[in-house]
Length: 206
Image (tube, rainbow, N blue to C red; front, side, top):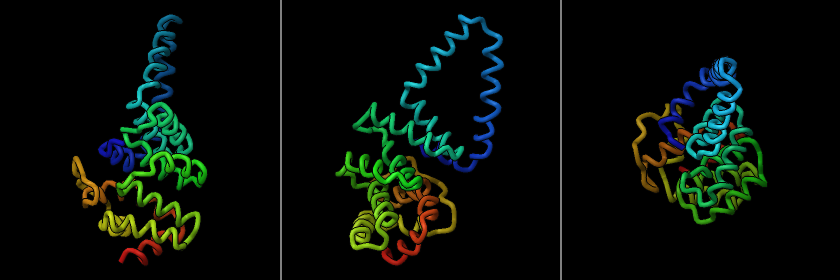
């Protein structure tokens, strides 16, 4: 995900939802009515071509999530992974997080198993959160969390903090504070929305 775009979507989600649901759809319909059948068909063909573009799909899925259409967002991200199973775009980081949020246990396992060697904060903390949500304060969940905290000791404090994440760096390395900022921006609300997760994180990360 482009996190510059993510920040805009996160803070402007209500305006974006209104734009998608009302203004954009109505404007497109109005413009199509002014065209001949042939011209309208050409425009629709071009839209279909854009729908196959991974970058466009990525932005579209971001907009769907911002509009709280999470399952529709997940469907787009799954399609992106099907078309690009190596996932050089990092779609899986957000997909796995959203699957936790909507309790899609089997799908989480499916996509997590596709990338068993991931070592970044997104992968490790997502796996820990999933384990806690599905198993509770178990030994396996605690081990996953300990591994995640060892790999990036800054993430827990970012998740537990009340102040918003600001001033994202353009790049980050594994285990860095910058990586922790990126993960917290995208994942903090999912951790907070998981019953008991923050207390568990605090208990095992101090």
